[in-house]
Every structure is written in C-alpha cells, then in structure tokens.
Image (cartoon, rainbow over all chains, first blue to last red; front, side, top):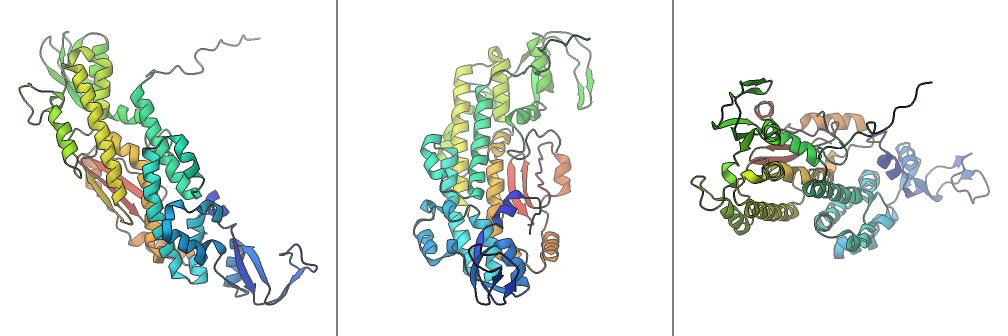
Length: 185
Length: 250
C-alpha cells in the first residue's frame, strides 16, 4: 500500500489474482456460485490483490502468476511491445506488475515491465508530440492508465503552448465584472 | 511554488513563464524626462530623452504602450548587417539544423521575449518579418530536436540537455517528469518496498538518495523551478544554459 489516498493505487489492487487455498475457510462468500459459505483446502479461486496480499502474509494461500503476465503475453511483448493491447489485459499493468512481482517471487516480471515500457515510451513520445489526434485515437485504446496519463500530459502541455503562441486576449475580464448588481431589497 | 495555475498538468502555464520572462532587462530609449524609479527588484532610471537605459521588460512594455519610449531589440535578435553580436541570428538557424545533438546558445527566455516584442514593439524591430520567421523556424527545429533527444533515453536516472530554454523545458516538463518516474520505478526493482515492511523500506530508500540540487544554485538564479511532488518524485531543475532532470526517491 504505497499511497492510501491514491485512487489509481486502490484500483490497481482491485485486480484479480489466481490463488490456491492452503487452509479451509468457513463463513466466507468468496465464490458466489458455491453452495456453502466456505472454501475448501486446495480450492483455486480468484481474489482481488488487496485480499490475496493479506492472506498470503498469513500463509493461508499461495499466489500464482496472473493471466496478464502469462507466457503468451510475454511473447507478444517481445515481438512488438508497442502494438500489444495492455489495457485489456490490465489497465494498471505496470502498477499491478510491481505489486505482484514480490508476491509470486518472479524476477522476470520486472524485466518484462521495463522492456515493455522502454519500447512503448518511444511510441507514446512520437505520437504525443507530433501526430494529430484522429490518427492516435486507435492507439490510445491500447494504453494502460499510466501511459494514458503520460500521453495526456504531453498533449496538454503542447496544446497550452500552441494556444499561448497563437495569442488571443491578454487580459481577460473577470466574470464578476460584467454582471449587474442585484437590487437591494 | 506559489502561483502555479494547475500543479497536476504542468508546473507552469505558458502565461506564467511569460510573466517570469518579463523580469529580464532590456534597453529602452525614453522620450520623457523622469526621476529614477525605485522598485523592490532594483532602481531604474533616471529617464532622459534619447539616453538609453536598462529596465525590466514589463516596465518597457508599460512605457511603450503609453508611447514614452522606444524598445531596442536585444543584440541576439539582430539579422545580417548589424554591427555587433558574434553569431548573427540567421546563422543560428543554420547551426541549429546542422548540429543534431547540441542546442545553440540562446537567451533563456527567447521564446517569450520575442513574442512580447512582436506584440508590443513591432515598429522598433528592423526586419520584423525576417526575424519573426527565423524565430518560428528555430523554435520548431529545437522542439523537434528535443523530441529526438528524449527518444534516446531509456532507463537512465538523470538526463542532461544543455541550453534548453524556459519555454521548451516547460513544454516537456510534465511528460518527462512522469516518464522518468516510471523508468525509475521499473529500473530499480529492489527499491520497491517489501510487502512485509513497506514503511521501513520506504524511509530507508528516501534517506539514501542524494539530493542533486544544491542550495547554492537555488539562491543565485531566478530561473530555478523545483518540482517537488510530495516526496515521491522527480526534480526538474532548470538553470540558464543547463537543464537537469533528476528523479529521486520513491
């Protein structure tokens, strides 16, 4: 829990991870379709990360690598990271990856994230500063939340500069000035 | 820093950068007689007709609007046959195009100053259209160059791009800040706090990181704009002639 008040951080912890229960748990409704209010030992369920993390610390479960870091995704990222639709895999791909890596003890996730980001960063850079909006709208759907923020930051600052360069009225009338004063009763 | 209009998008808006540029000194030739003016930023004047004097840009613009002075365009703006200034302004564009990596030395606020001059003192600039198109070209070439130089870095913790101007830094600041933060995060997996004891790991990392900015530089320059994002972040320091983008601590 890096930042308690950060909405992105909270949402990143909502991502589901596949876990295996080592202990049976009674009185919990984790799987809504099950008939009893309990989870058996050895049951495979998907839990949100925030819950899995706590249970993992109590050694009640073991966590396996989530689907968005599967071998298939890795191969796709190795082939051409810029074209992979990471948003559909997880909108918080990077944050989620950083959080899950120590839990599953997989060092390669970090390397995967870095190499993916390096390539995608260049793509965002060129798209953000040069291309017009209509051509990039398709590209935008592939980006994760973090990358979208990056793209929008670049776009906004460039747009602000262009607006300033074009000029316009230097002095703006305050909104309160033009109004008529209300008659006093 | 006080006065940021929107701290989330960009540290300063273009208008705010322009406002800061108005503190630069410029030479004017007044046509009125006036006693010296005493301001917090210094004393200017006395103003005597046809005697050139140095004043801040905002004062020059105010006097110009009232028709009380003529603004002398700065040396670096002179084109072609001017008597002084070693690299003529039209040469800068060529050199800028030739050298792929490096940026030519231009005043820190050249974008803003040129726009202010074009807005308020059109009649004082010789070869107005030439200078204007040159500035536009130089700016476009430079911005393109900034982008190509940004493409180069991958996973570095500090970037040094000498001779960037205030407006150019301001344009790329939000993007570079975030990008460096992300690079830093993914580049140092061991710095990610351990799940078992997140608080202790965090403080340890924060204390070990060297703060790159020196307090001495903070004091000597007006152009210093540190961006502290509550501990977790990126420092982006701009000095005349040199810009450092340094992330520190997670």
